[in-house]
Length: 349
Image (cartoon, rainbow, N blue to C red):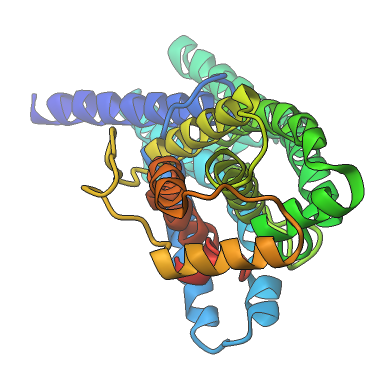
């Protein structure tokens, strides 16, 4: 009687492990919405611990970037072996509970079915049916990874297009002051509306891709000095400065771009359990930019011919009122992704 109870418990544990692993794979590769998964997060966190050991011996950013360029790809490729290993163990318990005489035979049966090798014969209707199901699961997991990679790299490519184009407009690393100055000299500040419209769409796509395909968050840009998060910070700061201090007609599209930006960064922060104030107000919640830095930025803009509003006090209040919405999550995501040095973002993360 005791052995029967043990076999039943082992069967249930094995079935639960298989089910949990399948749900993890579905949430990671199939579900088209933000759905954090503990197993996937544990794999990425464990891999990051391994990379952190290497980073302790590096100081220069370029060397750190070369180390971290393999972090996301290796973490992603580690998921299928982890899932397959858990499926293997789960079915081992199922086969042993169904009457396979030893754990070694259960291992042979599970491995043979999972990898579709077919070298381990099985007896019994239930055992045969479970070997069929295990073989199907193994094929599905491999197919999911193959189908997942093109989707993820398509999202990565869409993200990097505007990040690369930003270098022409905002320099490298990107800076809000550089963007406003270049538009003033080359195109005219009235053409900023095109930037705000393009980046509003970019932020919407960023929120969708970096929560439903979270591995993309850690894929580094082709150029070491480029980063999706520092690009986002430069655009948001440029829009905030344009709305607060630059003497041009009010542009609702800039406000929409800022709102789209901080909502996108907050959704990504939610996925990675990064805390932030849900309804911040300045000065109750301070920002990382000081008044002295803001004044210095205004002086630089004025020196470069950008028309500025007269009331500097009101401009500072307006700028801080915009910046407070994304300041915390911007700096936290710079830290999370080990972003390259960039003014007003990763330089204070």
